[in-house]
Image (cartoon, rainbow over all chains, first blue to last red; front, side, top):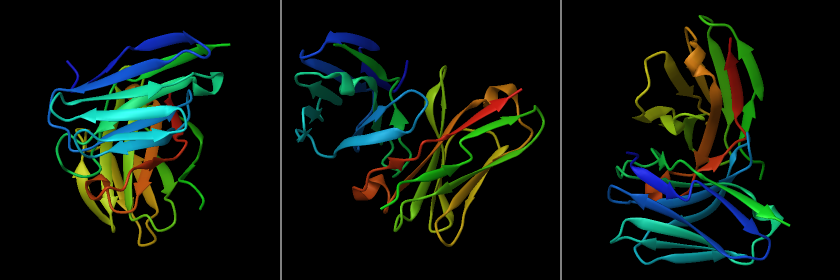
Length: 112
Length: 115
C-alpha cells in the first residue's frame, strides 16, 4: 500500500456544492502540503501545514492537519468550475527536507 | 518574481540516447528538487540540490543524475534512455527546503517521450 493515501480518487460535484478530500499517512508527518495540478502541467502550491491541529484557509479552500491521526483534509466550499483539477497532497515522511512523498491525487470535476 | 522555468517543454528521444533537462529556480531560491510523474507510479522524488550539493536522493538508478550551478540553476541528465523513462519531469525550488518551512514551487515540467 502507498505511504500516503488520498481519497476519493475522483470526485464529480455540482457547482455550488461543498466537498472534502482526505490524505492519510502511514508514517509520522513532518509537514503536509497541498497542491493543485491541471492535466500535464506543473503543481500549484495551495497550502502548507506544519503543526498538529493547524488549519489554513485561502479563498474558499480550507485545509486541516490532524497530527494524531496522521491525516489532513482539504475542504472546498461552494465549488466552482475553476476548482476543477487534480489535488495532490505531499508530505515529508522522513524529516529530510525536500524529499516529499505524494499521494495518488484526487481528480475533481465540477459540473456547471 | 518569475516562477520556476523548465526547458524544453517537450522532448522526444530514442531508446539508448541521453537527455539533459534544465531548470531555473525562482530568484533567491537555493534549493532545487526534481520529481518524475507517471500515470502508474505518480509523483516520485528524484533528487534535491542545495548550494550545489546533493542533499537527498530518491530510489532511482544511476542513469539519473543531476547537478546545480553557482547561480542555483539545475540540470538533470538521463543516460541510456528506456521506454519506461517516458514521463513528466518536474522541477521545484524553495528558499531553504521544506524542513525550514519554505514550500516547494513547481515549474510546468518537461514531458519526455522515449520511442
